[in-house]
Length: 300
Figure 1 (tube, one colour):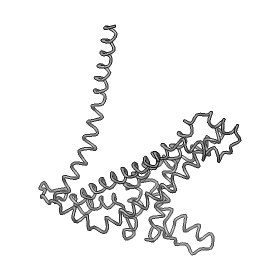
Figure 2 (cartoon, rainbow, N blue to C red; figure 1 turned 180 degrees about the vertical axis):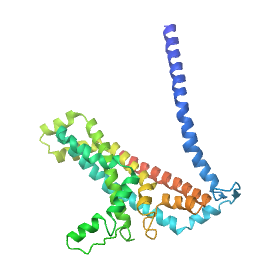
Figure 3 (cartoon, rainbow, N blue to C red; figure 1 turned 90 degrees about the vertical axis):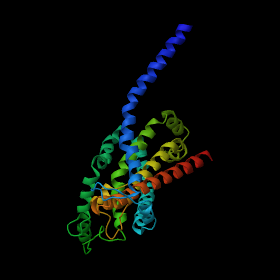
Figure 4 (cartoon, rainbow, N blue to C red; figure 1 turned 60 degrees about the vertical axis):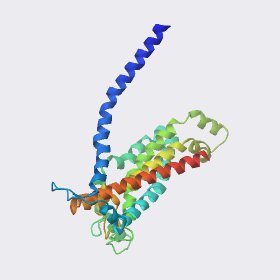
């Protein structure tokens, strides 16, 4: 009996040692590329530095005071919130519908799975350039279709401050709906087949099965997808920068693009770090509040 306990203790100790050895590179990666940059951004926000000179002048909270009264930052934050709301409201329902269609359609719809996922295989920069030319007021597809149906052409969606943000959100949704489609499709596939068979035997329609059986079982998946969409929308950068660079007149400016411009275009590295630190605090706070609200609703 004693030898058995010793053997189990020996195995547990060896397992713990092996796990620690394999986790050390991961911890080092997190410390070097995640934790250190965050701490360094907060440290730089307390200085006045252009990102080139070797001298960093301690500035105290002056950068944070400037950020607190920066109307462009507040405008960019509101644009991020618009993207968050519309992304969740558009991407998740359409992705859910496509996933349910593909799941119930069986193998005969396998080709559509590949077709629907194609936008996700393209880089955001490539998608940005593709739709930048699509939206071109002179040679773009939108203007050509407008002319074809008797319009005047010259449809400048990206140059119109009133609709530019919505034109960009359309592209974002087009690219990321496939991601959530696959996410929900995996969730549908993991549901016990007995649930579907029992529902059909009981006379339930596809709609009743979806609303009363499948969707309640996927609450955790939907919650995770909503948080992913929220966080991704709050730190979005590449596609917006390629298509509009935050224009026209700040209509599509986001926190990330505003941070990039200050840090690397106007060489105000300290103020750019302040914006990045502010983004970190805002994203963390909103994510925690969202998770708390979703968990509270689920418990209720």
